[in-house]
Length: 309
Picture 1 (cartoon, rainbow, N blue to C red):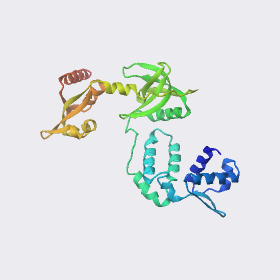
Picture 2: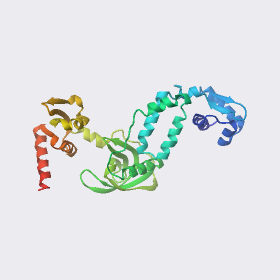
Picture 3: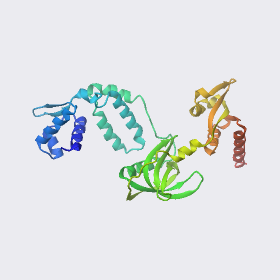
Picture 4: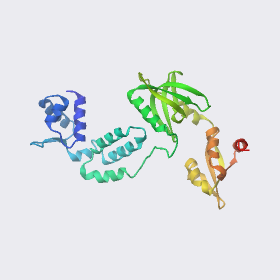
């Protein structure tokens, strides 16, 4: 008796209201006697299957059991529905629809409205408001390469402005700080690397497969970023920019200063991304300390102003 057939029967019964013994026999190409034996085995495992006779008879899993803790609770199903909707940005829409149908088949009719209502109370939309129009295509292509375990190639523009052609074994798509990354084994460097999708161009899936390697637990690019010396900068913020600054330092690090300003204590890493963040607040933000950060901001502002002289 094959375990994969038993699992397939369970999934089919979860997905369908009722399935006849004959249909199961034809689907799995086994005898009716084997199907009855499989049903007995599934029953003994603790999943209650009932049978009805007659023209419209067949096997079905008890409705109440479909949301019992032995399979999935109502809360579990709500979490699954929310999660599936949130990954629609990186998965083929047809795949999402098929999976959602299967998950919703776990819901007895008397719980449908309640679970659907709760699953729609939280929306996790990973799609950017605006940005690189090729991002969605890259996500779909990389997701396909991951599923088929195929190599990908692309041109890459790194943080230092250097362009190179890369050929990698893709391993993991990651969303970090509003940006998408692919972790993969670079065949040129013979090591795992992290690539930002917005810096890619000319991405192609190759008709070449690869053998999976052991994925390292630490992503070096993120680790290097966090290992840099982090300081706290003191900013004078106009009230009109308060909500934007809260996203980066939290309301507990913002204090009133007069009628129209606030003092904000912002975690800061001394690199381009840190300075660009402060400059993105425009004339609604002034760095008070430390002095070396303030001086570097002044230098960058002067250089920017020269471009428009």
